[in-house]
Image (cartoon, rainbow, N blue to C red; front, side, top):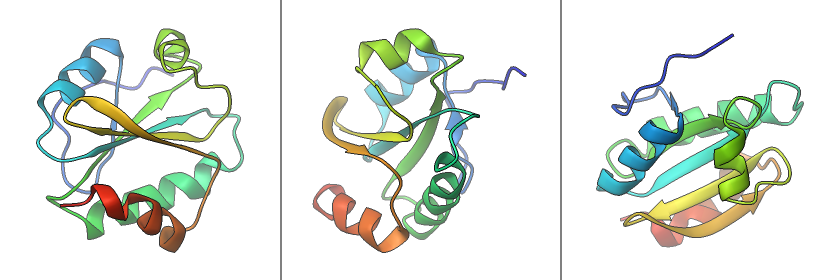
Length: 118
């Protein structure tokens, strides 16, 4: 199934990105962007997606969450050397500043992101 891509995320709805939308969002985001590199076959990706949705809602206006399906966007996964799912990359001012590998709960994720939240 192909998920429509967009470069305009809406609150509380992480956006699925292709390469073009990814580059545009990362380059123009005024807040940190957490990109969830996930896969349909990845068991831990399901609860991680729920945590990310909740964190994005709680941090509205301070953080964006986007998703990249590593099976559909192989070139993006390779570009950022994503070797396992879930992998979260945090981008600030268009640059990757943090790599978080593996699922985590909301509290731990907020701790990991605290340094990047305005």
